[in-house]
Length: 287
Ligand code: ADP
Image: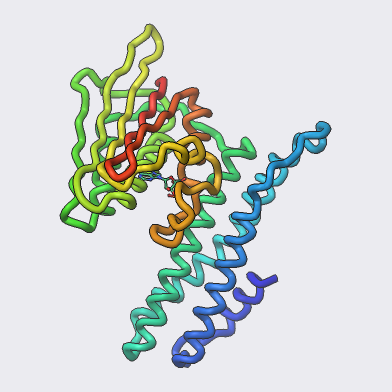
């Protein structure tokens, strides 16, 4: 309802006529839409009692419905972000520019939440199909490291990549899912490190006849995670501290997506962390 209103509003909206009051109203509308959506998302944490088979299928049905809804939301939302970007290129006075920037930040944040939600629900509904194709491991790591480097805007943080010389050139598996795991872990490292080092180490853990186990270590010298919170961080919508979302943003879905992908790939993930000193994620995957 709110969405279709926004979409209609957009169709009939002429941004060249935007004044400060209207921009501010639009921003408030975005914020309340985003907050409403987040409340719905974060309100989904209540455990579902498994009573009978019908009840048992509910989480899957719910995940499927969320996947459809998030997909539907993405289209108008991309339109909104696109229009805001066009608006940014027009002549604006300083106040308008500030408001439009805030709108851009709010809508981009919403896009990230929707994308994560879509990904998570697709995975948990079992609709996600995993590929099994040949790929070049070192090229994939180079691309991931490049993307991570572009996320590091602070000169006090350095990314170090260390590759085992015994790594096979080519592997069979799902390269985009592997990139997604690494980018999520590295993205978190960038988010939670102020100064120091982020490292990505890739090594052969064991080599069997038809399978090779590769170990990926993503370590950072960031804020760390308290011992009693470590067991919850792979749960959906969970963040280590109550003020994490306020300070750093995020939906608390990234690590549950990573865990789900690792599980589906028959791999293992573990975390070790010291509050105030840093965090290391260890992912072991068979290929
Ligand atoms: P978010 O979108 O909040 O980053 P995640 O599921 O990726 O969600 O992470 C869950 C929580 O785990 C984060 O909110 C943060 O509290 C904690 N966390 C994850 N990675 C790190 C890290 N490298 N350093 C410190 N805390 C982390």
